[in-house]
Length: 495
Ligand SMILES: *Cc1c(COP(=O)(O)O)cnc(C)c1O
Figure 1 (tube, rainbow, N blue to C red):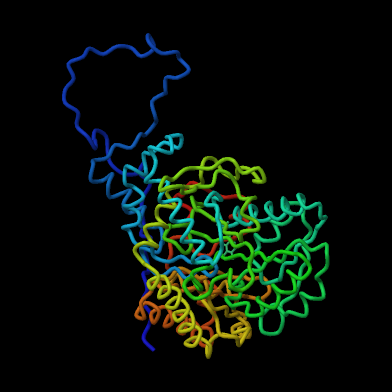
Figure 2 (cartoon, rainbow, N blue to C red):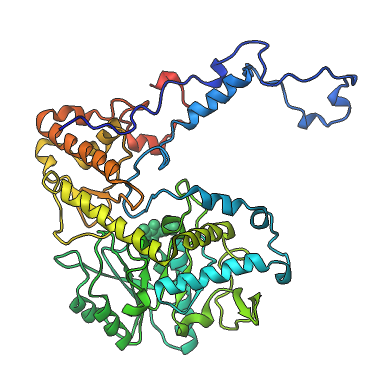
């Protein structure tokens, strides 16, 4: 096998800007001024006048540009190479959707501009809502939640409002151990109790286990589908029947819709509420904390409880309707993260029905390609074929004392961003890889080559893994100390 080559050594040595330049250099040369100098202290209070900065860097324009360009290149993003985080869909997003979001009509619109003068923006919101309903098989939706977890919270608030109005006291939400970690948090924040249920032998939720837990106190079941093992919960239809039979709702965490769009409609398999992550599936670059959007789609029965305002179309005119007496109120200022919605609208419009279907199909094929190529080198905890992501473990490498962390760190030396590690928690030493549909076979093969190379190193030369990464600016850090006592100012002395 040839030595793999990703995008290594992106971080070259870079001095601090204070160490660059010399006295008198300047990035801009101003014309001589013809105004006489005056003393600032005669016109400003002393508290607002800045002292001169010691050693203020003096650099030429090109030095300035190169310095910041080089620093920007220390960052590893999907524009630099494959970014295989699991459960996060770090796919490449077409740049044209960024252009759409920057169109002045969208980016400069004022949120209080009257409906009659905002017909274009309202069309985007209305059409996007309808398309998301069509994709998920639901009846109505809100675009207000600012993130996936926020969509979950909104869904739980709606369920609570529904039962409160009906005068039913339901306090429990069933959550499988393969659900995303945000699910139990959202449930607790709404004052419900979490009833955990273990997944079965194949990494799937078993119908009988749900039936055993179901009673009149259960408000809903909250299922992540595909679950955090990257497996489709195929018993969901029977489970829905059982839950509905006792008057409960089925909530689906559809954050990873990238595996299902155009293939499965949640509304067809008994789901009553589902949130999506526009920043995962529908073309918003993400990472670094947002902004994002986690729209929530619901069945007709729950539509009256959606946050206000809802966008409507009457006689060809679009408008916001604030008059929903049963609404849970607002969950976000104004209408949510509007420009994220514009990106999603542009993406869906460009992809079309067939394009979306092809994207999810390719995402699943790519994940299974990696799964098949690596399964003779890394242990697979479940034999079930995966959807958009595949979970391996370090079970084999542990015989040499090598862990998931060592493998992830070694990938950096071969120029790849490590995948998600130690998640999901139900798998010991998990390595969770989601290549997404935007990677070519060539780049998948390069990643596979790096993983295979590392597996061979574990056998022949395990100590290099314990010291990895060896080629990055910062090598192995004490992660606990790094988190508790972060040193935020980089200095050469640290390296
Ligand atoms: C990412 C994710 C979430 C949380 O989404 P945020 O936008 O980060 O709040 C919830 N559930 C699943 C399955 C996810 O993958």
